Amino acid sequence: MPFTRRKFLNQTSKALGSAALLPLIPAPLTAFSSRRSVPAADKIRIALIGANSMGFGDLENALRQPGVECIGLCDVDDAVLTRRNADILKMQGRPAKQYKDFRKLLEDKDIDAVIIGTPDHWHCLPFIAACEAGKDIYVEKPLANSIGECDLMVKAARKYNRVVQVGQQQRSGAHWKQAMDFMNAGRIGTLRKVNIWGNFN
Image (cartoon, rainbow, N blue to C red; front, side, top):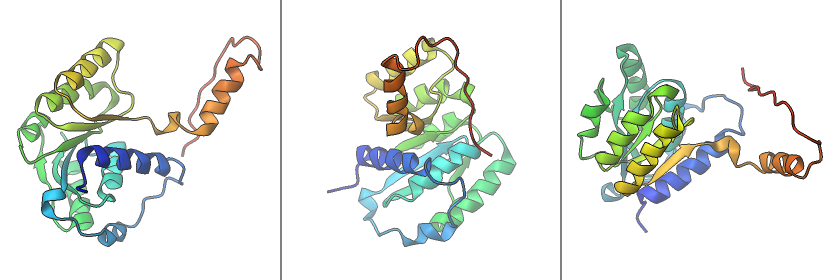
């Protein structure tokens, strides 16, 4: 069975979810060389929009999937593009084409899917443009800055029949559901205040 975009997104979201449970230590770049060979016709060609931090982490996890190749890299910062493309060269043995404007990247007909890892307030426009360009999408959380933006993004995904995954790996673990069940059962009484923090370095 060919390695489809839907299968790619499914396996990538599982990999990203698993990665959330591991310490935040980068895997050696040599781990990419052990991937099994996949026929060229079955490859998924992806591009990254927003190449720093979480976006690049998402790309690393995607490239661990067999048959996935990064052919495009977009960022407004030349230093980030240069550094990340050097990493991509080490990971897959060839660099990606570099872009500073996501609209130019989306014109590339060879790109099957994009990862949107831009800052939180800059997801909506690349997302809608990617849908219009016929690309499937993995977009980082939060999806958008407002319900209005989210509504536009959902409308675009449906209109252009795109496969979309939002990176919400910390929402589906059993411990989150147990906490919600405990709270919803009234076991802590009336909820009056919630404090939220991230336990990260």
